[in-house]
Image 1 (spheres, one colour):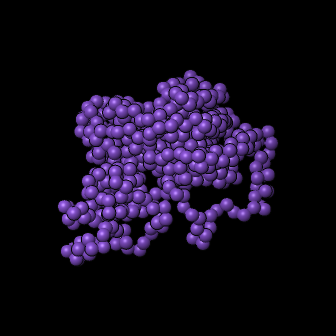
Image 2 (cartoon, rainbow over the protein chains, first blue to last red):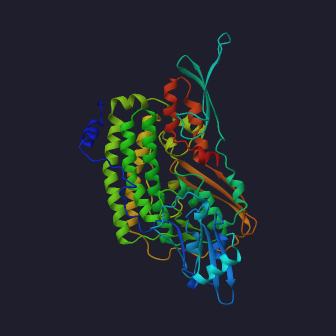
Image 3 (cartoon, chains in turn red, purple):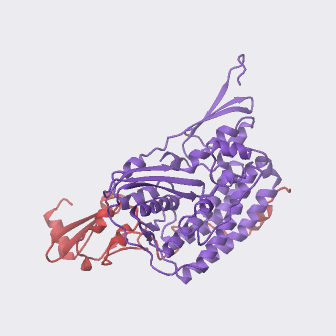
Length: 133
Length: 365
């Protein structure tokens, strides 16, 4: 039985820097496995839709531009995504990944959260047919 | 019982109250400062998760159920995956089971350190709260490095796990554990020797072994009253047969015993984590799971950081479950508040409540 069992800790802390990370001023690199924004590589996609089927929050839409030539555009709703990486697990062709660099996602409008991935010409085609998107 | 001539004075606490981190409603009838009775009312964080699970497929449910609780997310995902695998007749490979147990034990470390801070805070011992939470960051970083997220680790998939462990990662975990073991020794010493703190814990919220059995307590709260009840030992799941744990018991049954049991469980977790890292079985990470689970029903039990977590899963042969019922450890342990409140000071109530480590979100779903 003693009084002030943590006085020693408190005294030693007086001579130490705060352990709090100085976040916006100094950014520590994120761990390599951090699950940030989804990335999509259209080159290998076969349009099997397995990523769409198992997404727990319906954050992925796969839009077919030309099925025969395997041309797809992925519409990714970043605000719905729960970053569980089930889609990455499901993809047998390694098209999907989660970035450990893009994790600061705050934005002032909702439009910033709808991301389109795909070949440049496919994106042009999709956006020209649906100009309101 | 009430004296007929005197009015009963009831102090309502919650659902919104500064002393509660989550919504719950308590009514303490008092005579002066002494509590004469307590009732609890729950259900303020009901989100309808069990019903929502019936609308989603088996894989989607894994992530929905993981979000029942922010502290023991892996426990929920693990209980669900083990149950669904049992229904489908699939067994996850040994390496996956070992990694599941490893994450479960790391999660227990983080949960117990969080609890240590919260209950120290309720006792007014904010120094211990700040220091234990600072050290808890170590385990959060370890979990983030291993699984990719600090809270909802999503390490499980049906039929296995996502995250593998290589030598560099194993060393990072060992370093974190070594640091924490030293700190935990220090906290055990503080929790059992600081005079001021012991006045808040010693003899408070006492349950005898018989009373604990009668109230149906689970987890560390029951083990602090010498009730030998631990699913990891009684019905080993995942890799607990290969990497067994020792049950931590205490005979005293008061708040001090609950502190001692939880802190000593940390040492057991550190030992098992090291053992798993040293003898991690080689092999695959996932087994193939069917999309439709054959008809049937099953029960899946695991030891969450707070006690026994129970899942009932029923399948009708489709790609969605017909019914999922979750019973969380907190609902069993709330009896400790209503059962032991009588005769204590009103100021002891937050400590008794925090001492059973309540999780309202788990409890209400």
